[in-house]
Image: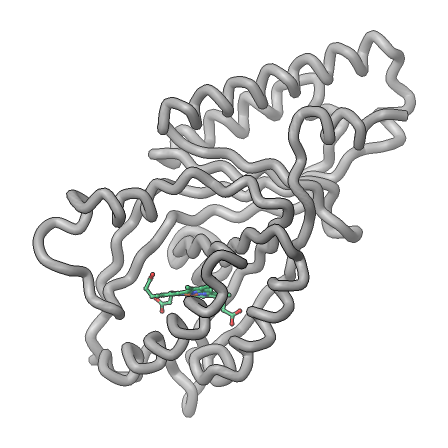
Length: 248
Ligand code: VOV
């Protein structure tokens, strides 16, 4: 048996993709729409306060294309908190005008491929900041789930630790060349959702997603072992932009 990679886990993640039910939104009267917007406003405020207190983080983005209209990406300490917040949101009047499009449950993950240093890694503030990250509020987001292959000839999980480490080193080098341009948050989802990882990228230039993902396609770990799900891409929504999007 190959040696399993040890991982560190941080905050749990819920990517909650929704579409707007435009027919219902347009059929509502002004008072109903104002009430729904007020509830949305209250939730956005609550999530802001929570983030300021370092108890979690939320990012809100519109989604381009027909897969969804927007996404709430939530990070919280526990699965229970994520569950409670989605239930609370589902009970709002605003949620009545949304249709669930897709969701993804995972947990922020760091692996020890490139060394984990001495002592308790969670006592290291830099490691803790990566495990419990405040989500960037970059202009654009890109999310997709992925697996590493388990085919007979290309089985990531049958490779030795050394072989995997070597490939991850090359992966990390490509990634590092995008420092300052793309920020990645890797969330593990083995046993939690349908794929093995969620990849969430943030950038102020959407073209950098294409450049980075394309370059990685030629790197062995992605070229040989990567399997990818659907891509979701969109732009940052603050309260004002959200209201503009909903304006009739
Ligand atoms: C923005 C750039 C960027 C950078 C700097 C970066 C670096 C690193 C490092 C140093 C490490 C290993 C240690 C750790 O930190 O966990 C990883 C780990 C990982 N990555 Fe990565 N990655 C990036 C970006 C980046 C992208 C764009 C993708 C998607 C791949 C693609 O082809 O579409 C990805 C995937 C992953 C995954 C699935 C893992 C976990 C693999 C496992 O088997 O456990 N990643 N990644």
